[in-house]
Image 1 (cartoon, rainbow, N blue to C red):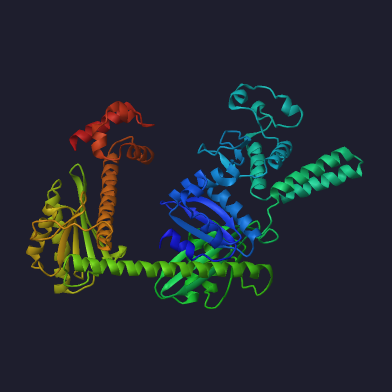
Image 2: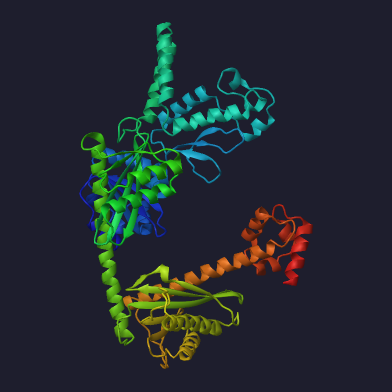
Length: 607
């Protein structure tokens, strides 16, 4: 389904939309009162779009939406998602300015800084914050409460005595040993708690101090505390989708036409942080699907919330789930099925989203099936096949400079990859000869078929014959495959072709000239998918084998333990690269002495 086709199917509801690039990374998050109208506004002639919007739309390849009950909820969710993903085009597009962040540095005694640049430097970032004035006020407040250092690393290293900030109670002077590292980190952890939304206790403390100051007729101090509280509340004043400080997940499922979708709304500190979607194929009852979603999601999770809100408990295996949660997390959540009130509104919103997601996936599947059917019929016609090629097998060879040669076999059924039927072959014959390797791979695959026919047994990969075999390569690889089939007496039972990469030429047995299909033909697109998947699978196996071989060799060298072995693997990657490296290049790896490097080189020369 194209991006525009997805947009045409969007609802008129309020919600949040996430544009994604070709890698699936979120590049922009926006909110809308009407999702369909708002998202459609991006699909204008390029000259009508702002330059930065135009660049963003050139990168966009997919869109995900989360439906909300109101525009306010969409606004809250938008900010949470921006904080979570930090999409590059939000910073560029939002009011044409970048918002400030709070950053806790990764130093021995961390600092809290305000910055507009987010870089991968080991620091921890919080934000962005749209109100810079409120942020500055809160920063000053945090500094007066938690007394973290603000001096640069150079000044900090030179200090031997506390500076003025210590004497005016604005710094705890870690430079002069006035506070231990452990105590300092406790202060920083309190800052983190506050920045992550657990600042209510701090506000209560300040309100008590303000009341005491007022009782003592310290009106100036009371007024200052009042201003501090207001600034603090301003930056914390995210309207809650769920009132109170609830940590809960809403888990809902929907299934239809052999497709199931599970959706989880994640609510922390009363804020809806986002959603997680799981897709399942095959026939499954609603209760079975719900159990599967719960186990899958929380099997990967680091924590379980206090409460899990469900639409039904019917067929929920609570006894098993409670035991499982106790075993994994040491506690079990409370399952609730609300019928009214705030939780029910959250549940309704989640159900609307899961049903919308299921509809989208069914439409996408239907379109994919139509395209696959078109591709299969196109291949039947173009290649003059006796049957529609329901089962296509693709083969490829991979090696590194003639070593570690492997072959792959991938299986597509009705135009879709079936990864459970993939197989790999470690080539035993001539390592640097692609033709011999292809001969061996095809021969072993179909000998296995014949053995299964004769002896009985089951093997989903080998027990069926394909309708079409695709060889990655040209005439040489094709002839090698045909020779293998002659040995098995299976020649003529199905069609074998080769697809060469440069011109996308299709070679057929006994035909002098190659066949060229236009790039827009669905049949060619399917062949390319099979070929590319076979190539990917072969390369992955070859890489795994190569690393395993190198790791095995490194284990033989005294002085190279697991940590150094990993460093050498990361730096050189193969025996060939290691063999070509000088002793000096090997000793550049941390922990590798000249003596160890020379022992390694000596072993490599013996290999």
